[in-house]
Image (cartoon, rainbow, N blue to C red; front, side, top):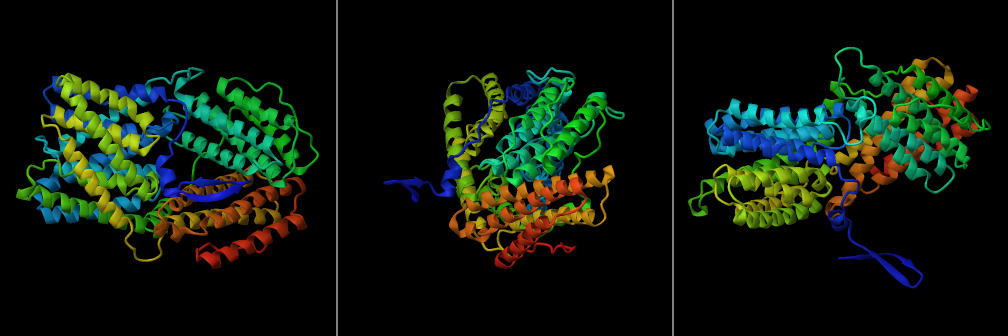
Length: 632
């Protein structure tokens, strides 16, 4: 039901409820043709090779792995794809191995308990981050497939086929050049684009200083820095000390951090700057993309501390571009202890419990139907728990949105496949359908319903290639049953506070913001101008803004839930607003500190006001935000 939101003149405007608006929203952007090509060359050729070698069942397993790897094949650098695709694939191989042997030797009750335990572990791990979430998903999906898919080969051979399928797509990602990315060493095209986007975002923020767009542009700069950080954080693509191209990229990223700091301080001041100030960062962006020298850079007026900092940062960038030496500022420093704290913290526990309940309940229902004589043949009981895995993942969208998109996508995909299955020759027509579906996955990932439809077509084609009858009706029935289970479990009260994921993200953001502020305050008491001190400050600043962006994403998803769930995260967006303003103010203070060697009375007054506001937010929402260890 639509609801009124505002009145303009005599006309009343209406907006859809957040949970429905999210279900209808799709990501936008250019078609990733390179990923489309990789998708077309992934599952179809693997399946064809397996048919020629008379190993059809292993080909089906490899094609499933390639499909899952294709879902994780997102835009970014080659080095980042090693972790983004390879990490989940290893988890999937382990899950397939465990599920296969458990399905062969354990009874229905023991198997259900085992799958429930795996769900508890995988759910907690998924709370760590996107790569961990992908690993948890593939661990669960592969364990269900291993336990329920009728494949004659041994478990270790299935696991090898799974790893081979994912490894094939990863090899394509590392070897095939990106169209248009042939400047210099093509292996670093993703990194080059990511670093150049940071300089463009700095220029955009300078253009927006003093306007209403400043906050949005600062958020865009944070997103660009996050993307560049991920693009550079993967393994080296050369064995020794990195190549000159890698060293240059690291230097260019490091040189962008003081520019971002100065631009943020200018935006916080709220005063417009001349277009000349943004011209330098734009030239730096062009130099990164074209892999050339910077040439002369226009200097901004040095009439204010932030402008002087911007000018100094431009000079430093020009020197760094020529020297080609950069530190390791792209690394996100999180110890194993920190990761475990996230996995077993409030957010990880709540997520793990919901995943375990959904995965275990769906596995129990599926096996009960599998052994029920009145239900008939039910060879694909693993579909039910595997579907529940995708439905229970909060990073794919709000719960109701996921359920609606999954149901609609499955029905559409099943109907489309039924039409193709009636006219396509077998098996060559089905193999072609697998290749086409693989090519569509990179585009379909922009909307969960579209992704579900494409995956449904691909999976049903693989089932039929494996020698089994058309199963569209069964696929629809299993999906609707999984939707019902996840809806029920998703609204069950859990031990402790609700919205644990949002609270965990807010706590992490608060800790990072306070660590950044504490460092700046220590610098103000005993000023240190050594490069190591500033590098530490830039690293802390990056972590503060990054955790704030992650909290923003979690809050936006929670706000789009049904009111029964959305109410548990009410007020969280106000806390993030305060934290963001605190980090912005801290950045401005750091720039002033570099310029004058001390914090002014106005700087301290702003910090005190924001800390007082944050304390009130903490009392009002009950969030466990850390106290500031130093007095302002």
